[in-house]
Image (cartoon, rainbow, N blue to C red):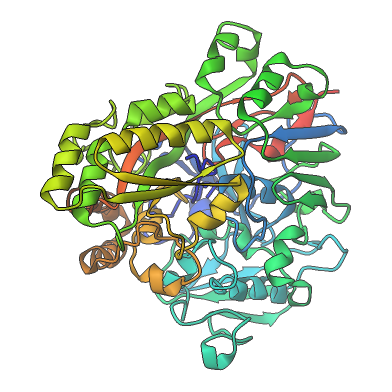
Length: 593
């Protein structure tokens, strides 16, 4: 899942059956055998409860009150809210309020994550080898226009998820796991071009039943189905590339108005029935998201806590320069801190950047100078030397680059490496947000430091919302893309197959899930081999692949393991840190009247 900080999302936890133990039982069967069994995967510290019997309404939040408007101030600007394309944490946070899915992850008041049925009656019924799953829809699930959700709406969303050329940048596990996922091209293309209305991987024998067929065992499917790409999308209401401007709501809120890159206002969806929803609330009257805000100004507003800012919050990390105004003072009581499940790194485009250059660039990378320019602090980052986040089961510590992701790099050594390989003056190209002063500062420092190491540089300014599209564009001229990757569930299977499988390049000609464009048979074969192992044997093998990639191929420069430190106003209630959501759990928020 991609992180939202592109100055540098998905935003949800999904924990596979193996991590919870179980030896081949379904989530439903395990919960029947051991009522609401919880498990803490090694290295994560987060507990997960499989709760197939969970019913709506969701448990009330202590002290919750109804009414009012909650405002989110953020420097970010989501590029799309199309459920099929949403894969950044901020977009996912919004869609959790408007979009229901077959299953859902809910952070309970016990501090554990609960996997619960959402639009489905349970967590699904698989066959013996997890290659076919059956789901039944609940009664009373409606779209915002009052029409009933049917299995055909789910089936169409499944088909739509394969239209990666027309709707790029979304999750891609379906291309690997679903039946004919590597050949079916979605409903927009003709049958002759590999698409069309008929897709063998989904069946709807009646209006309430959805059958999903896999190409290979997918025991974690109920967790993948928490993503909004498997919501209800009626074919007749699909506006294709414009659907993200107003996706039809099934959740407690719906789009009232939207100005891309500027503002989104959500209002109550009167056709949402809380009795059917065990994961969401509808306390506030409105959610008002204001994008592209000044990063320092918005945080100073939240520190001051005046007027309307008392009912505001952000999901942007606090800037280090403002800590003296926060720590050991009243605003510290409104600072939400906690771990994240993301690693940030610079993706290096292997199509145009030779291995020798990638090694030199990693040697020159000025970690500390860039963190200082970005306003980072120990509250918001920890130096990273691996691709896998530290919370991943089986994670192993190593440092292939040798810098500890600290210091300002070794420009003398890097320049010598460029000279010896005949690449002195190699041009490194990236983009930065020209509507964000801090992003411009970071870019300027990077430019200065890399020039001193013998590189030629080209920094391209563009608006924040356009940067996401450019980062996901395989035809962009950039050869360095800085971003983060977060676990979709606690396993290396949500990292390496998602962002380093070279076969994704051909399957997704209109997007760049593999932003390093690494396509090595050795790596692809290892991904297949490890994915076929018993689930309890995979963690150490994913860690070994992490080391192989960094020692032999250097597709990225690991920079830091993310941590959250976010502010909220004094009249924002129900604030609970959601590690897999990258901030506050929006489904629990209310306005203190």
